[in-house]
Length: 447
Ligand code: PLP
Image 1: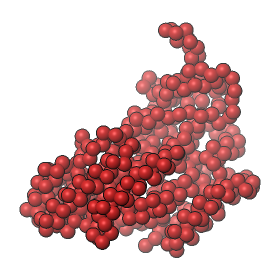
Image 2: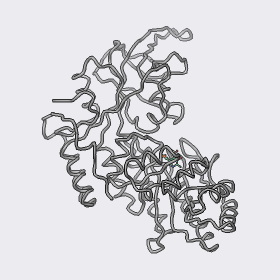
Image 3: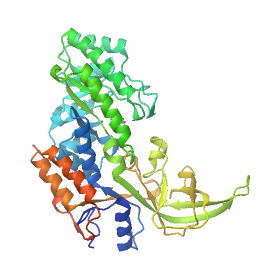
């Protein structure tokens, strides 16, 4: 196997599981203890195909805030996704990849004026709002913008709630539509977000119904309400397929009822964690450990210190209510102890978990964390001068060749079968050669 150090994208002859890939990397570069991510690009391709299959009427606009890794953005641009940007920097990042401005929605209801100005220069004309001041601001800076009214949802069953901060209720929505008409702005549709990590499909169903009613009011006022944006909130962790399928089924049904195809409304969504959560597996190295006796119970407990923490990749523990679960790279038997795992900075807050059950492990062993792609690296900083995990991407050559061909030729339906067939054939070959993936550095973006 040849894995070129410093080449972050690796093409494998046969499909790899993330943990297998991590093992190879650790074996090959035994001296390198820096934390790293194994990023499974096939997982992202599969997610995209699954989305297109499950909700063919809903065009995904990936929420850049969730993980703004350039390789992922390039891949999604190549696959034909649109983008949800929240700021000038995110818009610039997408435009700089060569993506056309009409594939971007500026989905932040409260924007700095200079950012609206930038959106105008960049030709990103579709943007959300949910308050009167925002309308006034847009009237001044970008009167030709195409506005999308964000409405409130019941996000009480979501892990991360937004409706206390964003979204107009029914009465306010009517008022804002009337105001927009009065000052001659163009409102083209309605958006909502049911909260990140939404546990129920009913939240989507109710929001779609409410959107219909508000869009009908807009139509009555003389607007041409032709865009519905159903936001993010779709699950993306390993093992959430069934949950996703349920939500997709409920969304399709609600769309058919309230927005039948012949009504001509374009439907988009802003999925973030759905696309990236399961593709990223983080490997951290144990840099120190201690034993202690719990003064209350006399129980022996272990403390492990690893080289990425809550200021780095694990900021999701603080900001995304995430409960990460450690797994060991090596099979290690022996008595298990209640263990806490701490990040590498000098701050006492830098604690990843206090309730792991782990055996005694030596310094230098690796702890692996699955489902670490969403709201991790995009919020990480190098506090104490300590870097967080760097991504190392992998995909099987045959898979990439299929994806490339199918998406370039827009034979997407054909791809579904092919990608899934590839998956089920995993492990038939045992060659494990890896080569640097030069091809991917410059993917051909669809025009
Ligand atoms: N759209 C908007 C406006 C958001 O604020 C967010 C998350 O904060 C998303 C989309 C993505 O949400 P998720 O990652 O739950 O799909």
